[in-house]
Image (cartoon, rainbow, N blue to C red; front, side, top):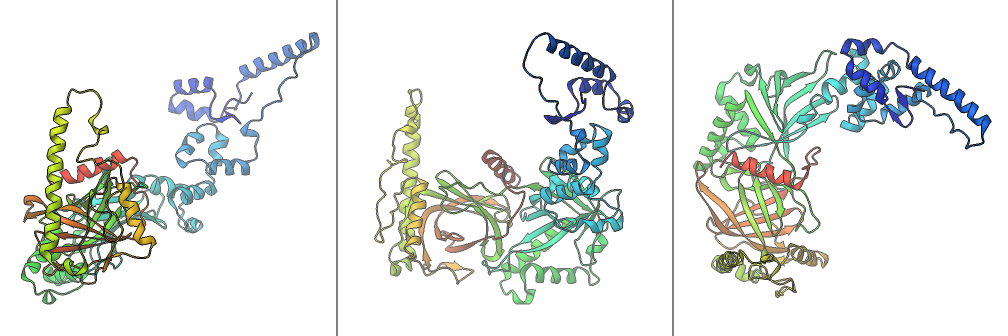
Length: 543
């Protein structure tokens, strides 16, 4: 009887486990050199075989089952294929089964496959042999050790925030800081620069290097503070300084951040905001803390696919916003921010129950007409909220949920009213109705003409001239330092699957948003509840 491995399961038998639990580490190591069979068990099995033979001569019975084959009897090349298909986290336990397994698990083919399948390492790992580093070292000392920092993160840089993507890039783990394109080119691709990298140059331990500055990689440090949080520290900040002093550093930062010089920016308020951001963010070039963020979960009835978008915010430039759907509402949460509305705050909220039917093209140019339509919807929303709260108070103590009965805030599921173009009017009900209405003009190859009212400012005049549909929404505005925040009415305009806009009535301003097209790994939320909790956490940090 094989003690430590069977085809029906790899690992010690029950008796072996009990003996291993009683052993210390030294006894376990010594036991690896002992035979894989127990003499006492062999004697018992031999006695059982004799009795079975005698019994077979006395009376006829079913033929004995065929002998089972042990994994230990398989050829080593087959065991390599079997072990290479197992998760890398299970292999250390498998190595404790017996000496043969431990010896086979030193085969680099096994770990090369685990690096490729679990972390996407497609590099030719054979060249590591020159440096004396094995694929097993890469897996254990680099990939597995730092697996908890892979994914999307938001740096704690006061109101400005940011977007960091930590990925496995070849034989490195690199932290890329994603930056919006230069203002106002919202449709341009994202820019990115490395902040740190981790690699394995010798067998002892992985090396962390800071990539900030213009003097090349230098020594850094990474500490995993707690679950979903880590920090980086630079030990050689002199590499961040430039020979021309702070003035040269500012001009270099301005070209990278804004794509222009200070002389090109004539707006005095914008100059102040830019200088303030440089002074504030340069304080964090030594140590940074990052908190994990997730991409929003997607559902079939979402108006469009949720995700990250780049948006125009006046003198603050372009900022990154996360669009997510929550039942009958959609929210835009800032991933990067500014001194007025910091990162983590909910910049816009869209009420998918209240569709806004725009007037004809000529009347769209009249700001007063658009304002009248939006304010009428806002008044209706307020009435519905009051009546809904009154009914909720009357419903306390009654049997049966009130939500199952139709109310003014929850109209009956019937065909929504039609507008002049045949699309549903502003009294649409469920979010699914909004999706169907958005698909109708897209399928017909048509969209409603759209133009901004006269007097509404826009950083980007090259906005789409047709839209699918519009909804009532609110936008968050505040004074400098996030003082006196308040929500003001506005219009959410859906242009297509990758672009939307928002008209801020009180500011007479228009923001255009374009989807971030980059693909992010290790960024999906484990559950909708985890995503909602993440939103609360990043909002509480700046409230």
